[in-house]
Image (cartoon, rainbow, N blue to C red; front, top):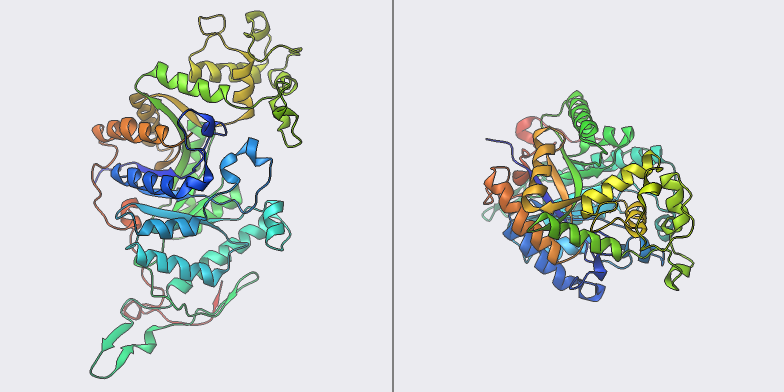
Length: 467
């Protein structure tokens, strides 16, 4: 069977671009998120996407208004996928949990239950981040990176043991003898480690999928080691095609060294800005840049939490040239741009490619576009449906990725543009399904169903285990 793209949609109600909520017609009210969630899930399922993905952020603060408004007040990921289990039929549903803060037994029980409720469509993304505010909200210190990864490794091993508490044929349901279960097929977990201690067994039946697909994000060597051993999906953003190809190759080799038969699928984020034509897509992105609040002397820019990287002074540092005090909407003169250092030249090229503006052209580059692009890094690909599909195809066929996490700059217009323009183009090229073939998330992702670690037929045995 030909290899095809994995496509997931990252749900961000206020958009994945900080100014997205300001775009005309975009969703902007967190109080209306449930209706938008339902509509987005149904649209993603109609487009035959593999899954909806819900990130997590366990704190809030006024600074997020400028940096990432979607994080200010958002729906809980686990609650969201439980809700969607009842309003969707085929699409996968992936929630995020932090191994440092989420009770292990509770997570095992919730995920096994949601997998049952959804008919085998749940997945779990395990993160290790230690934002100081999140740590404070959970009565913990931030800790170092290495211990957090060690903890996550123990956590994931124990999570799978808990899911395997019940063998698949443990429920004998013998009405004649009165025997409901075979007690020999219910197993204690007894996972003991430096960070994890859980006895089990789990009081929830084994998930439909056996083990939910495990997702892990990160590009560090320690993160890669965790993904190589335990993750089914590795979320990683590499700066270039060459580096992405190398990363995926190294990850697969490392996973096989652990004795794995299913290679982890490498997924990278993308923020597509799509329209019928290149020019229309560039105008959409140009508007998003225009709507990014910058240090222009306005009262908003005087806010205590306003980002320091949104001033002309910050831009001067990036381009390597003192820019003085121009108006943000002034054109960037050719004589100034020619003096830009390498960082400034790269920034200028990015603006020209994404907006269609040109130095000294009919639509000239202004300081506003340069500053907004610097202030808001984004994996943006701007163009027509065919042009965005070209980018996805290039990375996929080069062996850089197995698929993409699609970040929508705002809802619902840009998500509709992606599903209406990019997905059909990928389908025409034979790169993406036209109908669901499987029923579970593991089947969508091309993953085999894992045997129960205690499976009597496989000679498994219960016992005390190191997490």
